[in-house]
Image (spheres, rainbow, N blue to C red):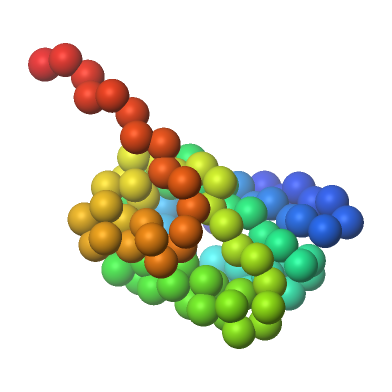
Length: 108
């Protein structure tokens, strides 16, 4: 699992470079919750996530719930097409409250 971390005094940024699937969820959970507790704000860059399944989605929901419970800010600052499609399909964009960039469809 590869996670790139960048931080400032108030915000930590995680760039997840693996798929958000059941195969990576357990390892990512501990790292995500640790990062969430390390700074008042956590930014997730999911632009390199090629695949997301229900386990990955549950992990994002857990992180959002924990951030709200602890009074911290969690935001997704970049969505891959797979993440965006899943959030659109399940109508979850409003729950996370982060802006989604809608790209123009390519001509067939």
